[in-house]
Amino acid sequence: MPHVVDVSQLKLKSKPFVLCFTTSDNRRYQISLPNTSDLQRWYRSIVSRSKRARISDPHGFEFHVHVSWDPKSHAFIVS
Image (cartoon, rainbow, N blue to C red; front, side, top):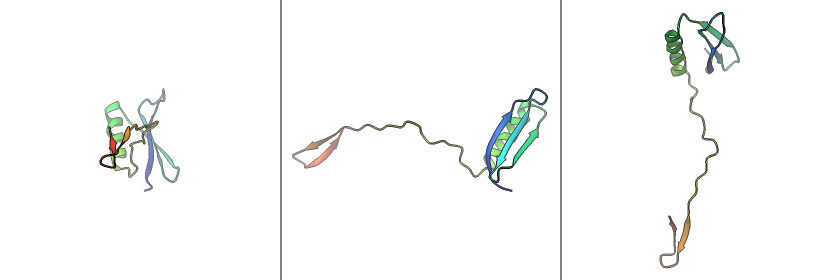
């Protein structure tokens, strides 16, 4: 089976507990479940087996450091 690249819940009025996942070959699958606990259990199971990391990269990350020069030791000092 191809790798799962996305998992989400579909919000349908006729079927409120539908899990949708997309694979790396762009196929979409939908699973209709009887209740919220089954939906969450399936979601966790699919995500845990997916090889794709679910951690996003940081956005707008900045790192500020003040560096000065020590003429005696001839080294930079980070403060």
